[in-house]
Image 1 (cartoon, rainbow, N blue to C red):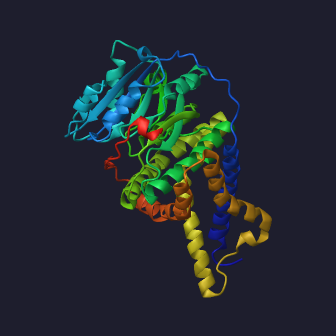
Image 2 (cartoon, rainbow, N blue to C red):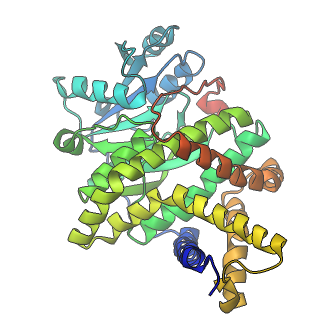
Length: 409
């Protein structure tokens, strides 16, 4: 026994179990279940776009949404012009959207805008089976609503679509960001759906039935409203499913600063949601004996896992520098072949996924820089932890105006 064993041995056990758990989940994202789809349009949708000063991109999205391969009488397009000081509202109207303008300096952010819009939606004469939610910078695959209709007809209540990139080849930042999303789409969302666990809502390209919204309310107004609503629903036993063919193209940050700010907001929000929801979810998961809820707790603990892993690595280097042991390294007692497989898997899985989706050569070049993106999460998560109680919303400026026809050429 060494002086730090009582701290470091439990930490190493946690790191090992956490890594093995997600490695086993991840490999289930390399295949897809065969599915017989319901291709007859039945469900009605309120397609909602939250926009704050998005004049550069809102027109392309509304034009795109009006051309979806779904009966026009079964969906309406709503744009929330939220605290806009530009002509976002007018552009959206001219393109054919139903625009609702909101002005509120105190309750700022997408979560509050969605709460406001849902209240207005439920008072309308026309009733919808579900809402489909997009960000203003998005473009949407023409079969999106047809794929969501399929999931809803099969009884799903919360559905997340495939999160693709609108501009994956603009800069190395947008490229590595896109790779991260492609990898997560497979080894996270698809993998969990394949084995019956809950996916998570991704903020855009998501579909929620109106009966769930009416019964449980939205109530998600933090920095990561999508994750907040996911965990709120999961605690009630409502899982999120994944529609792999319902594709939404998201604008990725062009600069490292934009990427840093966006990810720091996500980290702040995830710490916030974790601290508020984990106690309730643990209680409900044990009471219901529902592995999906307990898995949701592990999802929320990912930033915490990154922090303790970093602490372990730093202390390992300190131990090497001192030249004498401070704690027992339990990995020396584990089979080296097992550790090699798990370690190599973290690098091989992204390569397999990029090969599967047939990306352009630039993506393979960006893969070299992918570790920069991954390891930059360490300081981001640390700062997110320090600022976890700050809830000031910041807007990500979108400028990449691309039409759907240009994207799909």
